[in-house]
Image 1 (cartoon, helix red, strand yellow):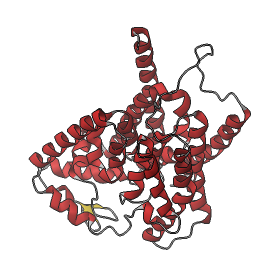
Image 2 (image 1 turned 180 degrees about the vertical axis):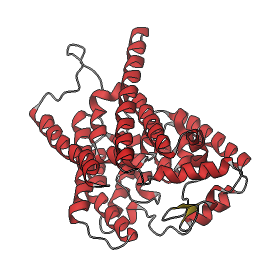
Image 3 (image 1 turned 45 degrees about the vertical axis):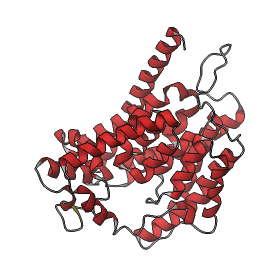
Image 4 (image 1 turned 135 degrees about the horizontal axis):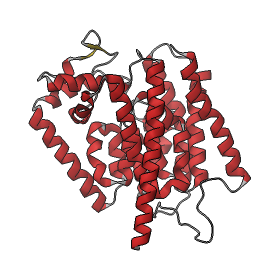
Length: 361
């Protein structure tokens, strides 16, 4: 890469990072101000980090009947609590906004050179719900492209390990080094945290593996046929490792996209999954909801991604799009198929952003 190209790429990364960060922080602020008493997933980490700074066991403050009355125990490992510590300098609402903005900016930096093909990520239900819930998914997707961010894998290993599976040897070494450093810090701060975390996750009946979701889940094992491909390894790891089924954790699958149309399609599929559950799902318990969502995700999202990967050669490729230097750089679709997909995606994304801001109090 020439010096001029490197400078241009850095400039693009900075612009995309700032745009992603500002857009996402604004949305997080709007949600928080509209629903100030609605707790996000990050709130439990904020309270746990406060407890850790006070010299107390962070796993003793989160859960039913505890200081932070959450429906479940703290399922996150201590590294996630440690990452949340700097955000305790802000009130919880400010911490949500700051974390969402930082995570989005980091993802924007990682996407930078891929912006022409990957920008519709921000319109996906996976991204919007991740921003709404102040989730880790943007950081984990960024770690798939930037191995030096591998330390965030330790914050949510049941999803983060899929991004480790996508690395080549050099990238895996860098990511594992970051994980090791983060774990060493965690044990130095709280030597007994591992047993507390294991006790917490032992009571999580809704954590499941997508590959076991009948009837179609076992088909996802076909990703192993393309084992030389980073995207195939990421998909295989994601469906094998048990985790709570969610729309936002599907964000890491955008690593498998190679063209604008693929990104538009996957973003639409996450929207279809979300709205399908909203309109057609009927669940009496969270466990039933998680099972239903997990089964639907296999058909609506996982299998289409698998099909795309199986059509590719069994070899690693460069996921950076090549640019036709005779054409101006643009992120606008140039054909009616992509334009139609984008129009449909904009409708669903607008509904998903707008409805919570006007319907809930």
